[in-house]
Length: 120
Image (cartoon, rainbow, N blue to C red; front, side):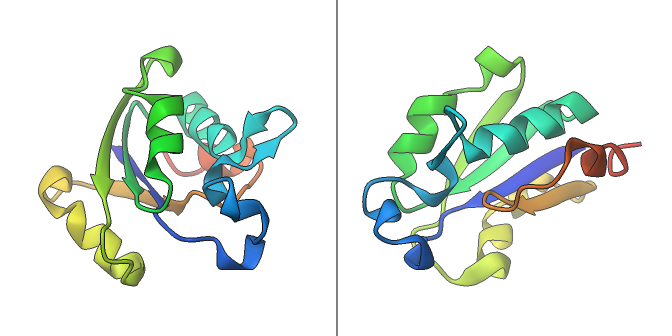
């Protein structure tokens, strides 16, 4: 099963921090908050990720690259027109290929045990 993480938004409510950082790359205890999500999903068994990027996408791509450091595979899809969750998901349609997937937002942190309920 693939994990799709939505990370394209502007983070308007987090300004002035998002004037410098992509909202999912805001540091939290020395790591970008998105890294906690990726790690939690990886520890649950997810190995294929689709990250939908947009605003300040370079920060995400430069940090995670192809996922090799985490022993996962990452594909990036750019959401050029920020038209919401549905629009982001439609961009992933060909990669999902009518298979089950897990969708989350790149700025929603939950305890790792929550992810364990998903991929079992």
